[in-house]
Length: 169
Ligand code: IMP
Ligand code: MG
Image 1 (cartoon, rainbow, N blue to C red):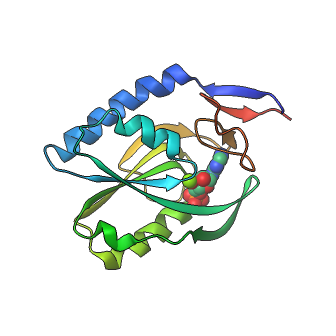
Image 2: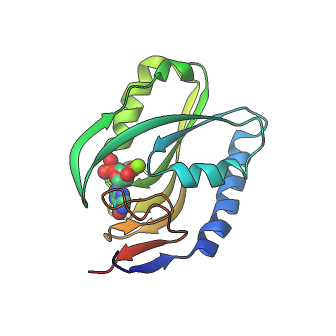
């Protein structure tokens, strides 16, 4: 495997997550809410985030994909899932990275007819160039670089890296 240059260390991620969870908790107060973990990229972020939140917080999963290699295909595919399970719930979409926002828009469209109580977004990474609406909770801003690690992949590899980095050519 190629080497990966670290961009955001495991320690930086852990520190930021505590603050992010604090912001989220402050926003929801005593209310019960449901994390909607967007697989596969968000599985580590969601697992670490939920362990910083109260035990009443629920979690659901959706598998969405739009990337081929380092390029967005522009089309989002969601594996079969039951969006109606979220009816009446306060939903917090948990995304690894908001890039073009295509995935988010697709999920928002799927959730709209369901009738969720509220819909917010937490993203570990947000591209500074993103044309999408800014997430309600964002971990780190990111430039143009294609990153891997902490759940994010390049052709399904590198997800297990504890830090976020760039694959060196
Ligand atoms: P969007 O639909 O263009 O916002 O893209 C969002 C999805 O593309 C993310 O949830 C990731 O799965 C994937 N993605 C975008 N940029 C990267 C990257 O730098 N590394 C790994 N995956 C990425
Ligand atoms: Mg994703």
